[in-house]
Length: 163
Image (cartoon, rainbow, N blue to C red; front, side, top):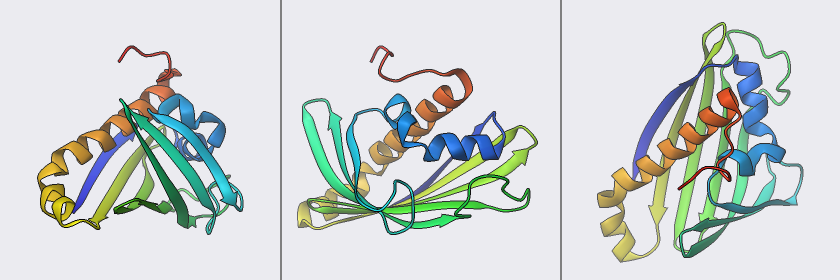
């Protein structure tokens, strides 16, 4: 199952990218994150594997995230015409996910964030039901993007928001 979502952030691309890459801010915008800890390497660097625990209602999901691409490696003084790529694979019981993020300048003070997502499922049931749930997966991705946008533009912390 594949889908793409996108959103404009009213901040310069370099600032947007640095906020998105900073692990200190993750719990402020990534709803449900309990743990995001590197098992090896440095947070956000290519090859780093991290243990990720998410809480969604009564359900807890544990996964391993591997950073597969980050270009440019240095997120300071990014050339104006460069596209920032940040890609990762997430493996959990019964599921594999690839997220391919692209951030481009939409204007001098605006960033376009495009997120391509691909899911594969191990069980026959999820392989049949997964495509029917495309809307729910897409909706969750858009919620994460809206939460990041609110955090980046206004300092809104999801931990303080009313569900």
